[in-house]
Length: 100
Image (cartoon, rainbow, N blue to C red; front, top):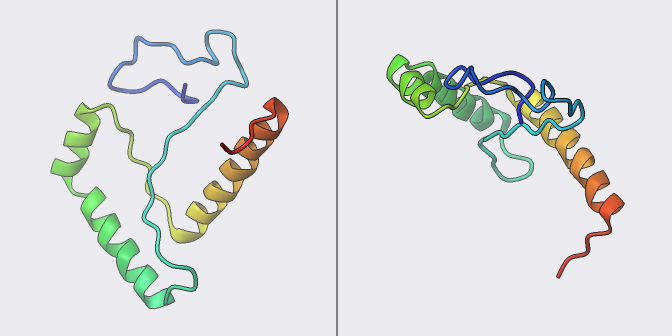
């Protein structure tokens, strides 16, 4: 359901290619810390994550699992979280879901 075909399974068309242009769901994973975390610690954690995910062995293992690694910084991560929160909040409201 990603916007682009997965390199691990390039023969599988995307939902967009199958005629569903608005059905794109991108999974993502991020490191989070407490609100108002020390910016120096944020930079340190980001640097460690960048180093780990830049390691060829890590990238190869993730690629074999079909995971596409796209590294982003703290500001971009905040923007992605805000975008997806708004997107899914609108879906929840539209279908009338309520907490149970």
